[in-house]
Amino acid sequence: MSLHEKSLRELSEDLHAKKISSVEVTQYFLDRIHQHDKTLNSFITVAAEHAIAQARAADARLAAGNAAALTGVPIAQKDIFCTQGIRTSCGSRMLDNFISPYDATVVAKLNQQGVVMLGKLNMDEFAMGSSNETSFYGPVKNPWNTECVPGGSSGGSAAAVAARLTPAATATDTGGSIRQPASLCGLTGLKPTYGRVSRYGMIAFASSLDQAGSITQNAEDAAMMLNAVAGFDPKDSTCVDRPVPDYTATLADSLKGLKIGLPKEYFGEGLDPKVGDVVHAAIDQYQQLGAELVEISLPNSGLSVPAYYVVAPAECSSNLSRFDGVRFGYRCKDPQDLEDLYKRSRGEGFGAEVKRRIMIGTYALSAGYYDAYYLKAQKVRQLISDDFKQAFAKVDVIMGPTSPSVAFKFGERSDDPISMYLSDIYTIAANLAGLPGMSIPAGFAHELPVGLQIIGNYFDEARLLNVAHQYQLNSDWHQQMPASFK
Ligand code: GLN
Image (cartoon, rainbow, N blue to C red; front, side, top):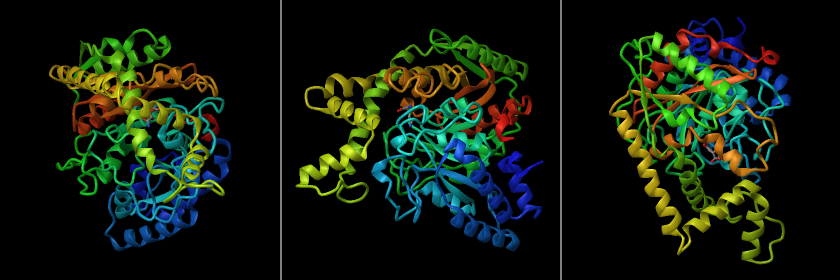
């Protein structure tokens, strides 16, 4: 078995058993990136020297016998996480020249484990998008079909893991950016509960919705990643102080008696029937594993996209006001006065989608419109949370499709923001409510991967991972690899 066919857990076992060194594994993946990423464009920065230095330190730690579970395993970071001394661009011209002076907490925690970072992954600009077409560094290709998008905004994370240029990657999810690309690339994506993982050093898009997580080959690897990054952080006031269980400990639990809620709103109009068939087949398999299916309703589902596209732009218009050409990031040439500096630095530094969001958000927050849009959206958000609360009184998890379609072609939705926004119709509600969600590979439609979405109750990541793992013990969709990258 080649190294790139191995999961994070398998690589970690080989490293601990000294079957292979971290320098060897790291060099192997750096070579794969070199060989394949010209086609995919999944990396913005490859940190080869940094990675080899980290791998050497990991080998020393493994030799000394004080290694942690992930010591010496290589991963890659979405370029939204600040990495000390290494460019952190957030997919934007605005931060093309930004070298972070500190590490995000997620990065620091993985460093403490002795994890090796191969580089920084491409993404939609400031994580705004569902296709990775808004990146300043160009689109990322889907390894399953390079004429198709990998999904977004964590498109680089998904493409790199799908082509096995890295065994696993970090990612972030504000409205679906972990689950949707995981679905479109045939991978396991986990968005934890809001507050489970620190947002410190993760460049802010919409602070009340943003959450860090992972894109991996399987649920077992996602559990290992969450073990490493979850937990309280005094540097993030929205990070919740509550014990972190060992997420690998309950993976083997039986699903007998598990109650699965199927929201009727997730199987209606707009869903590609072939995608629906795959999702239904996966749900039938859960029934065979002992789960009970319960039809439920999330009556306010239809309001999630409109509510999100008020709340997220409102928060982004405030968060992105810090990019003013003064303190860091892009600055226009020869500004004539302060106003010219602001206008041109922002005008030249941001791309079209980011500007669209800043304008919508500024409008929604302006005096006279605040009550009509922002306040209204917040009230709708509460109704959406209440729908889930009622559902979770009856069921343990909720299942449905992650995305209404499989990966689409480049350009197909980029001129029509509304059709792009609808790519996240099934994922956004979990962010509005702050709930954890996963996407796992469930099969293929139109020769492209289809994801099953699993939404859990607050801080129920252990159950989500258990539910995902049990399916993966009984299926091999997660082991399939795109033909050109085998
Ligand atoms: N596609 C959604 C958006 O464009 C979600 C992005 C995300 O989760 N970061 O806002």
